[in-house]
Image (cartoon, rainbow, N blue to C red; front, side):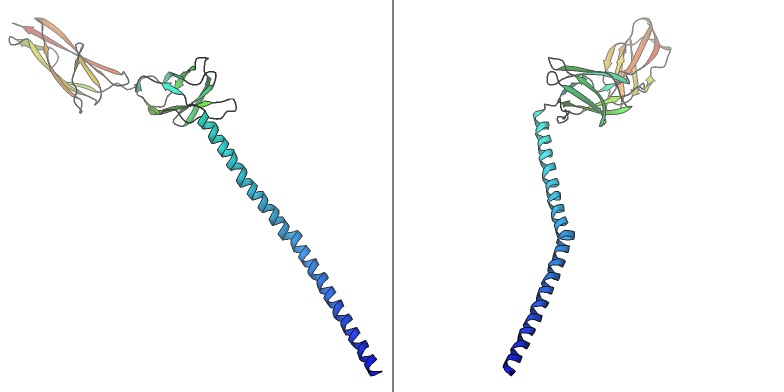
Length: 243
């Protein structure tokens, strides 16, 4: 009898332990399922999305770069380095039947189509006072841009160059001698000087001088300074020569 009683107690004890383990297992499964649904799974999906977003733009950028490399940049033709005009026409060449966008100081100005021979022209492009940094880009049908063309620096200057005449004084009278008079003065560096139509050497500081031949009687000497933008300043001196 004692042995049977002991066996029943052992069976009940094992049954209780089995129930506790089952309940603990159920609780752990519930907890694990909760964390899986609320934290692990969303973060895993978010990580996949983040990885996709990283890979896709890289492919797009690579494709865009390849498109840029296949587009030839335009060639702009501006045959002067300075102008006195606030608006100019800009010609050039690019791929036939394409489009070109013009930039001035990194600001897009206009878009024009090229002709079948690749030529194009931008009409009445407005310039900023001072130095203008000008370049263009070719556009394809998808509006992809080429690399920039060669940068052109164009100066817009509408002021007359300074011009002062040191000698001769106006209405100077000369009698006898070599029938010459010294003409000297100063203008802005980089400007050209013409004395009665003859170009004079101007040094780096803008100084100039020459001996001007005279005729008998009154001589009107014209001194003209022209800067790189073709702005002009002019002075005249009357010199009378007698024997």
